[in-house]
Length: 264
Image (tube, rainbow, N blue to C red; front, side, top):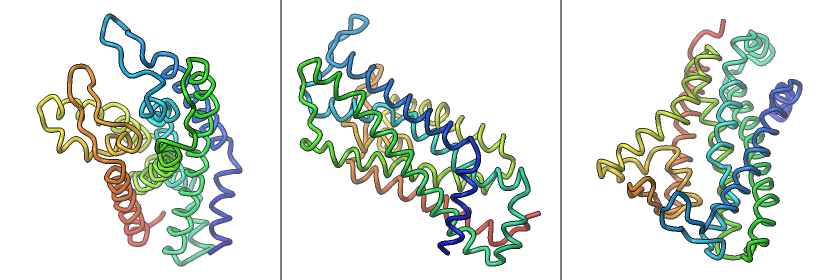
């Protein structure tokens, strides 16, 4: 199994895509942290000012501001890691070298989750390195060891890794790499947030909070008010469990399909 995992990791690290996505994760995380840190507590557009950098929840949000984009990069990695196998016809060679498909699926899940964890660490590190100076410059405390900040950072790393596993499941369900990417990113980035906003606007937040992106937000944010609409979120542990559930469903479906259907 160890050799299979190494083989799957080698597939990821021998192409340029992984570090291109990694750079995107780091840059967007840093940029969002600086932006949120610089604007927190300020009155924008004539609206009421929100809590400033002296609020622990705001500090947590600054460090993890890029999470809403970082998980999309991890999602794309998971999709490509499986759908790319069919596009480039490398899955056939993998199955011939290792006839036991369950071992293939397990090793790929481990490899994708490991790379997802690396992306999560990059997102959190970039957010902290960029956000902490802004918080300090504005007179706030960086709170890296207090006020649930360590827990939030660890959960953010886990969330990114789980999104990579979800992407792996999507790439298994839809073999066409371009179609799988468009659907996965389109639903996660556009369709689902619109659905979530609509459900909250219709006072159906009890349903919306179980959507994947809302569960991700629950790891780091309290109940918020967006655009005049009250947004309901699960507690942090509830959001973590929901994300684990989505990842487990995606991984199980992917494993079942890979074990049953023809590869070529």
